[in-house]
Structures are given as structure tokens and as C-alpha cells.
Image (tube, rainbow, N blue to C red):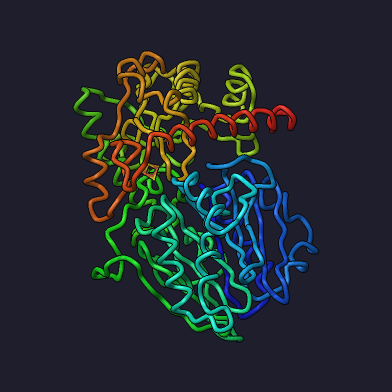
Length: 495
Ligand code: SF4
């Protein structure tokens, strides 16, 4: 998962890109980067949070130019090295700089084709490089002396035929403008915005409307699956779609259901709805399953903070109080970067502290967005029991995760995913909970019936062709990244 942002003039955009990225920080914390375009590309990228990478006024002033891109990275393919951080740039056939969010699934074949047909040597393990070189190779076939907007769009169309997987992309083309496009299934989000300024209109693209709210852009619309938008250097807007045009000018799509459940910020607008509203709906729907299990909790609490809206929806539907029963310390790092299980447990205790008065003597339904490996869920159950909860029911707003995501969500390997290997009863025993309640896939599909969604991590039905070797390579890369994060966590003293 990553966050991307592009701003097309008509003012100096370096500072706004840095500020806007902070509103997308929840989408990636491994690395951050910005590139701007003036007489040349000006780029800075590095490991860590946006505020770690851009920590001086000079950083913004060095990023000169009226068109620019920003990226926050959570590595889902490739390593966590700074070498793999985005943006990426090449200088032929035009100066091209690119950021993307998603995951290319036919990376091995693409790497091979780029090498044999276009003599391009892919230097990193970041799949944005594959998209960048593919676009460069397609542009190279055009009339370079007089590249038309139609040439740019037909290059994107050719790219769609070659690059498989999920990708929302923003690109700078030196001397031409800014190009944004979304894969034919529209798996990852990409929105288009506008702001009127004294100098004229400014346009922007972003993963989430949270960045627009912060920067004062109005949300014009979401790019449709298979759609491309090009903004010329003088601010002309051109649009094109590769997918058979439906009512909204978009294809059917397969939007990631997990964006609603967990990844997107609750104040983001996606698919025409606010994420918080969808989470309340999911929470309300869970009440049927709680009742069907014969449970009568006294209170509902959430695992902060992405489960808040689902928990409050469940409480409303059950007619019982919602309380904040766990306090989160936001100044403690993520639990997966520490090396041992004992350390991880210590970190969860540091990170989440139960409010004893809220839970003591109560039957507590604790709602989380999902259960992936189950390790954190188990610690939470233990924390609540230690704080005096009479019974603990662990409630997942997502259905059981049974399959690996290949589209840019780094959940776990299949052998780590608890529901892929155990029954609900075995999970309950492992968590030491009195009950485990999941959302059903049927209910989730019904909640999002207005959204053409991807539910592959629950159903195993992938919207693109996914070969078994692809899954193997993605799993091997995940293991490599985990070892790098563990190493980094140890070096950083378990930040
Ligand atoms: S497999 Fe799951 S996490 Fe991945 S894109 Fe589909 S719904 Fe989202």
C-alpha cells in the first residue's frame, strides 16, 4: 500500500507536495519522496516518515517547479531499501518521472520483455520501474519531435495490454505535462481535484481526498477503471478511457474492499461515499452475527483507531453502549518491526492500554477491522482479561482472510494468515476469547453492492490472471522484507 500525489501548477508546488503527503502518511511509512519539474527534475527521497525525509525549509525551496509528484511508501514488492523508494525517473525518450500505488503481477515476464525487446535493464525490485520503462518504450514508438496527446493516451492503452495487476500511476513528462492513469480494474484509488487560484486553476491527483481537504482542492471525481487524464503544461485537461464506456465513462472495475475496511482514512471519500459511513454500515451488519451466536455483550469497544466506526455501528444496532476501552499510545512504533515475540508483546502493551473501569466485570465485544495473523488480537484479549473483563468476544469487521493479496496489500504470507489454516473455533481457542465473530463475505458483498469490488483475499477469485508462481514470488519477497524490517527494528532500538 502506498500513497501518491501529483500537483499541476500554476504555482511552485514543492511545499504543497510535502504537506499533502503528510495527509497520506497512513498509506505508507517505509519511505517518502518528491520530484518537481522545472528546467530539470529536482528529487529528494529517503527512508521513514515524510517529516523525517523533509525536515528543513531548504528541502521545499530546493524542489523548484510548478508540476510535481509525491509518494509515501509501504513496500509490498521489492525491498525496503531507499534505493527502491519512489519517485523513479528516466531521461529517454523524454524526461519521465513516476509514482504509483499497487502491485504489478507479471513482473518476471515484463522484466524479461523490457530487456529483450527494448534493451532496458531493470535495476531495482520496485515494480514502478517496470511501468515507467514500459511507458517509455511505448512513447519511444511515437513521433518524438511532435508528440500529440493522442500519442500519450495510445501509449497508455498499449501499456494496459502489457502490465498486469493493480496500478494507479501519476507521471511527469518533461516539456509536456502530467499524466495520471488507473489500471483497467481500478483496484487502487485515484482521484482528480481542482483549485482555483489567483494565477489560474491548479489540478491535482491523489490516492485519497484527505490530501485534497488539506491542500484546499475540490474533489472533481475519481478516475474510472482504465481511464487516463493528461494536464498540459499550460493547464489544458484531456481525458481518455481504455475500457468500454459505461454510464460514468468507466469500466466495471474491481475496487479493493479493504480500502473501506481498513486502509483508507475514515474521512476519505471513495466511490462516492465517505469511508466512515461504510464502516458504520459494516458494524451494524455484524449485529446479526453477534445475536445469532447467542451473545449479549454489555458494551462494545474498538481496537483503535480504524475499528471505531464499525464498533459504534455495532453498538447502535445492539442498543448497548460504545466506550473507548483501549487507549492507544501514538508515539510507539509498529509492532511488526521488533524482532522477537516477547518484544512484540511488550510493544502491544505499550501501545494499547485498557481502561480498567470501562471493562471490569463486563462482557466485552471488542471490534477490530480484521484478523490477519491473530497475534495482536490474542494480546488484546489477554489485556482485557487482565483488566477484569468478565467475557471477551472478538469481532472482526472483515470476513475471514483466506488468500494472499497480490495487488499491493502486504498482509502476511498464506502460512501466516490464521484463517487460511484454522477453523473459527481453533482461532477462538488460540485467541483465548469467549467467542470470535466474523463478518460474512455475503454480508460484505451486500454492504458494497453499489461498488464493483475486489474481494479476492476472502474469496480467492482474483480479478486478473494470477499464476501460482506469482504468489510464490510475492510470498518470498514478503519474507525478505520482514527480515529487513526486523533488522531495521533491531538497529533502531524497536522504534
Ligand atoms: S485481494 Fe483483498 S486486499 Fe487485495 S485488492 Fe483485493 S480486496 Fe483488496
